Image 1 (cartoon, rainbow, N blue to C red):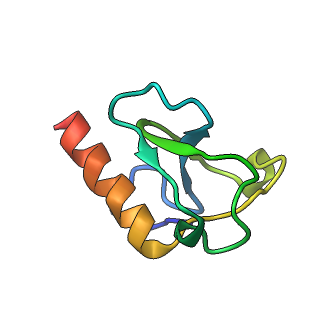
Image 2: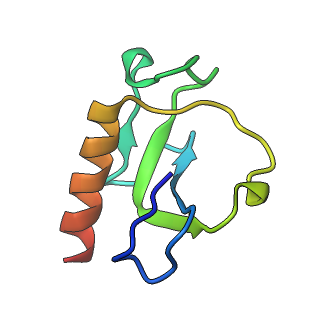
Length: 85
């Protein structure tokens, strides 16, 4: 969760990126079993770092599956910045 006075919608914000099992996206980031903070997903999965959504309320999260390690989140963030800049 992110929140800071500098952000336009200060308060709780959840920054999310799409995870898919489709491997044909050229710049997707493959996830390895050690990339997960919690239990890995059942199928080989990939992050699409250009597909992000900001949620402003934890009530918007209907189902929690897992989270990635800080190192892998940093990889996703770096690729997102490269993609949008």
